Length: 171
Image 1 (tube, rainbow, N blue to C red):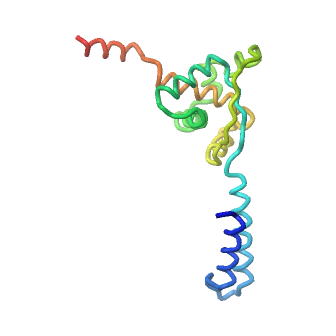
Image 2 (spheres, rainbow, N blue to C red):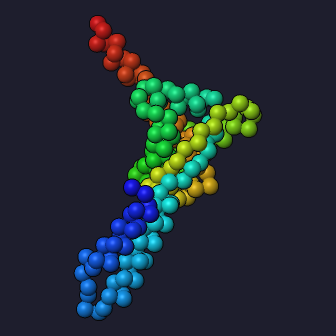
Image 3 (tube, rainbow, N blue to C red):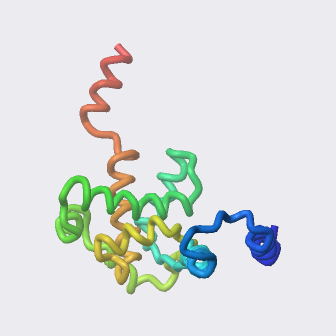
C-alpha cells in the first residue's frame, strides 16, 4: 500500500469521525493528530541511513570468515559489528580508545591500498541511535572495523583451551 493510500485512509477515518471527540473540542484533537502524522512521516523518512564502509583486506578476510562461520550475510554482520562495539562500550564499560588499544588502529591500511573493498548499506534507525549515543557518528567506519575484529576474535579464533578440549575428546 502506497503512502498516498495510507494518507487517504487516515483522512477518511478522521472525516468519518472514528476518532473520539474530547470535551475541549475537536480543534485540539485534529491539531494533535496532524502533528502526529507529520512526526510519523518524518520518522519513517529517517528509518535508515545509507553509508559506504571501507574495509582493508585483512579485516575483509575476517568479515568473510564471520559470514562463513555464522552463515549471516555481510550487511547484517557489518551492522551487528557496530551493535557489538556499542555493547562493549555501554555494557562492559570500555572506552573506544581502550578497544582501539586492544584491537589495533582501525584506520591502519586503509590509505595504503587502492583496491580496498567498500560496501554500501542502510543502517537501521536503532543502530544510528546507538552510534550517536556512544559518540561515533563521525567514525562509523572505525566502529565497523573494530566490531568486525571483536566479533571475529570472539567467534572464529580457536583458543588453546578449545584445542586442548578437542584433542582430549579424540582420545
